[in-house]
Image (cartoon, rainbow, N blue to C red; front, side, top):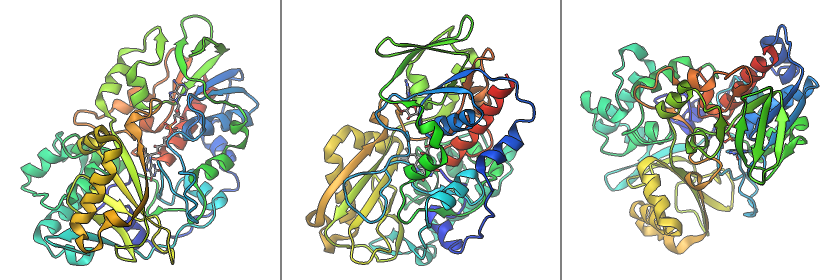
Length: 463
Ligand SMILES: Cc1cc2nc3c(=O)[nH]c(=O)nc-3n(C[C@H](O)[C@H](O)[C@H](O)COP(=O)(O)OP(=O)(O)OC[C@H]3O[C@@H](n4cnc5c(N)ncnc54)[C@H](O)[C@@H]3O)c2cc1C
């Protein structure tokens, strides 16, 4: 997810190729402690469910204060939706989940800058297919339909949310006579926000855009996987993670909190911080006793979360422009980009990024999705025979991951305020963090997840 703009992630990068450097905080943790925690009272034990960005950062903050912390992680790895692709041997990182740092004003940005090494220089150009040709963005923007889509996106970015009808982006576009003949609107809004324009709530997009305070630009690390940044940010927390431990029950009726894992092991603590995704909370795979209050059930209904995938395609030679940023061509996948852009001599990789109903269809195809997607490329680069050049592929289907069940949360029509309900503590013992609980517009991002950890830790310390 990104701050809404007429510019996509890579377009923003282009505009901000020379990003204004941000002064490094002496310590991210001390900065947080000053801001969030004037009078801590709580000093007991905490169980954290989930070792993604939110769970690990919360664990780090609590461990630094000397609290007893246990982090239970269902899968066999830390990171959650930060996940590198191993084994392809590329000199640049391949990210299956989060890939870019959105904005230059967050702890996460500073951590990436401080620990993670250099950001990629960006001198790329976005390309779009207009009629039969794949052309640079500047040329594509001469097309009246493309110009109309971009001006609609710009308007939504600036709009006072109260004046934006509380309908889907598709409905609003139709009301305003905007035709998405090129699929570009889906790429810039629905797909970027983790869904499609049929589901994405227009007012929620405007709300998120107005609330965004994470700065500008989008940044990819040249040679460091984001997981390494997360490890560096949370060294003490990493040691407190118990992997392969799916939590199946949380009982907070009496005394403290009793947590049961799938093997029947019981863990007890004074407080519990839950960082699992909306998809996991909705699934009912964690049983709460007593049941979570109605405000949580409502929030889970009013926050969008659904299928999405990245398909990474490695080719023996490059058939796309050498300076490719994003690629928008008709078909199931609204956006492609190349993690190998800027690498002389390969390896040559394209990433297909797809959400919503198209992702659900591709997911149902299983391994055949690769050929389908390469066929989409063939349609736009017919002379190149992409099928013949394909060397290997990887499908990361986040909807099929039992411990995530989708990609990242997005606004639905009618969802205003729902995130407050998801974030609210329950009975002074259960606390909630994770990207979907961000109430200030940074949902769907890593820096947002990190910020929710700070908020939840402050709540725990005050409890
Ligand atoms: C394809 C994709 C692309 C993205 N691109 C970007 C990007 O470019 N930039 C950006 O900022 N963000 C991006 N994001 C979003 C970002 O990755 C997430 O917002 C962020 O990583 C979420 O962190 P979290 O801690 O809230 O949740 P998670 O990372 O989901 O962590 C929750 C953890 O809980 C664990 N868990 C689940 N159930 C249980 C259970 N029962 N018991 C114990 N543990 C459990 C999970 O295994 C997981 O490790 C992307 C996400 C995806 C999927």
